[in-house]
Length: 109
Image (cartoon, rainbow, N blue to C red):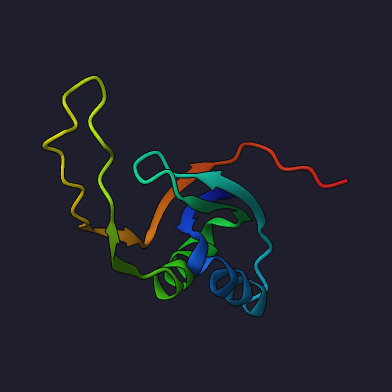
């Protein structure tokens, strides 16, 4: 048995959740926050048999696409902000970060 932890952008959360339910995979959704952009994410915890791991990974890949987004850079701290011009910067966001972990024991009560 495996535990798949997938961190996805909030914009992809509902689509992924619907796809998992449609394919009869159960998941627990947790609200999380990304460290780089301080933006909202959703972390999915999906327990499944080893034989189903590839199918779950395909569902995640199909439903969590990366995209370009404009973000305002953070102003400098402690320095002279007079010459600081906050031009938006284009960064790639979205997609999914996925961890597949072995599970020694699983109990459901």
